Image (cartoon, rainbow, N blue to C red; front, top):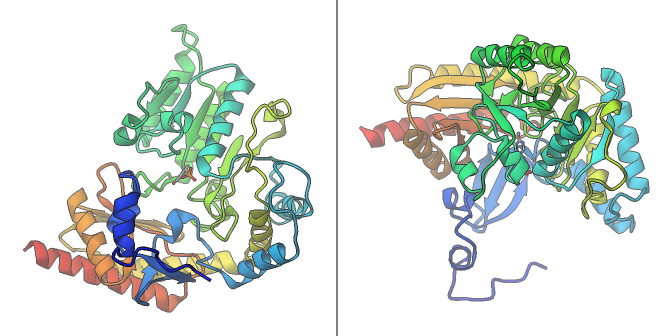
Length: 425
Ligand SMILES: Cc1ncc(COP(=O)(O)O)c(C=O)c1O
């Protein structure tokens, strides 16, 4: 049974503000105590329902408490299968690896080995950066403007946001930033082709998000990605695709890079790979980059077996046929049509970007986007803002959302935009 809050005079939010560190963030945007969640919905203690177009920042592609995955988790626990096992071989891990290979990697012709890292995205990014540096013997990693790769020091060094970087408290080194556009391609070409002539070392790697989630839903074109791949291949630079937020179907294919036809050397996955919102992260690596000696990179929570159990069932349930991913495509069309109808021409909105089920509503400025997100919360919709100035309202509904819920959520967003404009007038 859930224990009652112990201090009768304090509300749940009072407890948070009194005891939790000032670094807390989402709770400031949504200052209520959530109690339950199911599918695309979250509920507060009074039973008020919120449509969740945030989906655990991309960790809940299959919705909250997905019944199929919940059953897998309950079976795992009630069967006394191993829960914690570092990187020991367990039945559940064997099942996950076999399923990932059979359902995801083999059909796509991808010859990757799997490295389990500590269970958060930033652990996978750290491992990928270390692998690239070890394999090449070089130091620098190129990242792009508006990139986001996590908050530990290595990942932060390839993250562009100056506020986040400033939080490091130390100098972040051995990285180079290129712009996330055609100038970036020109820069890479110049850098790679003249490195030797100017006595500079090539970088170890380029790390890229095909769609920048935190950076503002900025979408790299397939041809842009192919040019990056081509330059890296031509100069022996390792290409890392960080698919932590955009992988597992978010952009309309299991891996976000699939439509471009590129094959990255290293791929990071986390967030929705467990399917149930349980911590899990991994790096996919080409066999020739499998260069860590045993235990050279490790972590106590690499073997989150409960997450392996839900991840296996997520792959079996949603990825054995094309039906699920076709539904993502169809919902993109449905939502795009509605967004065009309701928001194009709105004075606060300058652009709408989308791929699969990630949408970026670019507003005139950050404060306007924040007001729209706050108004959306009042109308019962959870959305966050992103972008270098917080000027983009980001929509990440669960991929399993029904058409009706999607339409309802977008109606709430349109209402929030109208109310925001009226409030400002
Ligand atoms: C592209 C990308 N990489 C890395 C991370 C870091 O993941 P985590 O917060 O689990 O460390 C995130 C988190 O939002 C992300 O979007």
